[in-house]
Length: 254
Image (cartoon, rainbow, N blue to C red; front, side, top):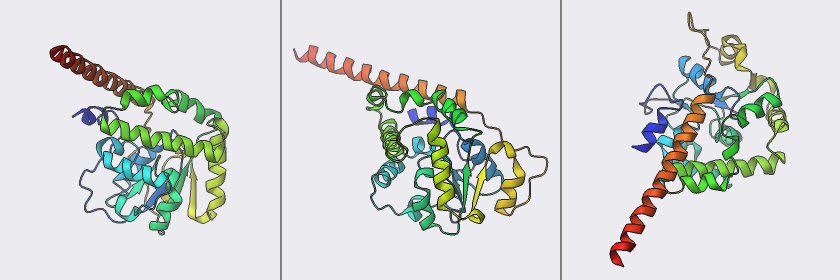
């Protein structure tokens, strides 16, 4: 299947059997490109997996429908939607972290941050920045359902960011972080730069530091670029195929 090809390029949960996972224990409130893939890997090593990530939407497109509804302000049962996950990071869950925390009030909140807003925005621009508001990108994805639905979620996220922060730029990183910090008690929130490694994370989660296991360093910039390129190729190929079929059909009928 097409989604399998793309899914292999993106970070996935190490554990595939989700049924025996308990309640959600950790909620990531950090924006994309703040080390969320590294945190995902770390949480799963620590036993807080499977960890939900934006990449899950490629394999489970029906989840995109529910997240799109939530981003539109509709009521979504997050206890059902997040069933089977031990933790979550990245968008769209980071953008709905308050609603998810209401469903899982005992879960701990982690805000991943970059060194600066400039560094964060540079990472955005180096990966999916050019596709955020691109109607052409959305059009190219439209015929492939799981890609179309993922684009719908991304476009709704973009509108939410612009509505809340005014502009997608370096300042958005700092605005988002300040908002999350102000919305939570200091003892209930870990502001975490993945460069800090195991110590602050394990202390916050009250678990032992893994022995002889380095903190994950998932630099997925090139992975995301390849995945986007693959999606665009598949999307345009689907349009070429449809156009060819229609053209042949018209020729035969004519």
